[in-house]
Amino acid sequence: MKKYLSLILALGICMSMCVFPAAAISANEAENEVLTEDEFTELLTAEMSSNEFGGLYYEGDTLVVNVIASQKATSLRPQLAQKAPEDIDVEYRTVTYSLSELERIKNFLTGYMSDYSIMMLDANEITNQVDISLKDYSDDNIESIKAAVLSHGGKTDYLNFIDDSNKVIRSTVGYETDNNASPFSLYGGNPASFTAKASTTRYLTGGKILIGNGYYTLGPALSASKAYSAGHGFSGTVDVKDTMGTKIGSATCNFGTLSGDWSKITPYGGEFFPVVAKATPIAGKQVYMLGATSGETTGKITRTGISIQFSPYAPLTDMCEGNYECNPGDSGAGLFDSGAKDVLTASSNAKTYGIQSSGFFENGKWAGFSYFTPISNVS
Image (cartoon, rainbow, N blue to C red; front, side, top):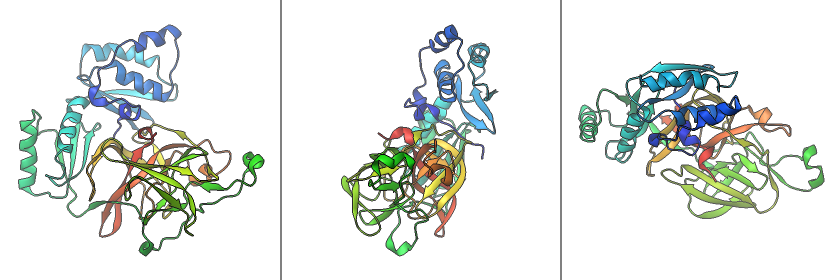
């Protein structure tokens, strides 16, 4: 699906404050170097002022850069072209509104999500609009939102209201009554790389774990002693258990607003496997979730930098959306750039995009979109 990108946030920079020094190109030109994908997208956003930059995203294999028509934006293109990775085609498109303007209104409305029954907000880069997913799609509610935006100095012509009155965003924590078996064992054999530690217990990504009263998925591991899962449904630091009730580690909750929805897991003994690297969520990229209920599900990243709200929690900002399937028990699952077989092999060079949080459901069934915390937001 062709959708959205907020790479500034994924790189730890707020896109809505897109004002940067313009020294990056000249420094790189001195070395005449071709940049990596992440370096190039960072350069793009750094060189354009906030009132000229309209966002960027992938459309197939093409990186689309939205710009407000200006002499500076035109003059930058030849310089930027020299730095683009060889395997990336870059296309510039002219849009009406800057991303900073759309983000300004999105951020303003985030503070009123409960008041207006808003479930999801997105500064949509491809359509140059602010998408507003509504539980209450009544005319009165829509007119109230328009009035609020006008009072904040915004415009109503870039507001796109979405009727999601029959749907609900819910967390994907599981419970015993869900009766879902794990397709991936929490425990695995020792690959050749573990020969020197043959007696070490290895905990596999994708396995079912118990945190508090809920079932979660053991998510991505960034080291043998540091893995992640979801952060909703408990608070503070609590024990992590396997399905037999044996304590295997502890989980420390991080949940809310810019923190997203994640927990850091430290083992009491044993090691996490496999260890993966961080990857920047980019709209249009293929993604694989490894969930303790759903197993491997696939899709594409459809939105980045969004705000969502699901009961009983306050809005979460800087979240990502994908069209991979999720179900109760998948909370905490890793989102990867390769499939289950590749991720779970000793030779895997897989990277992770983030940590599963929640999804859209209708009549108890997954309804097309899932939400995850970008891996750049964890520590």
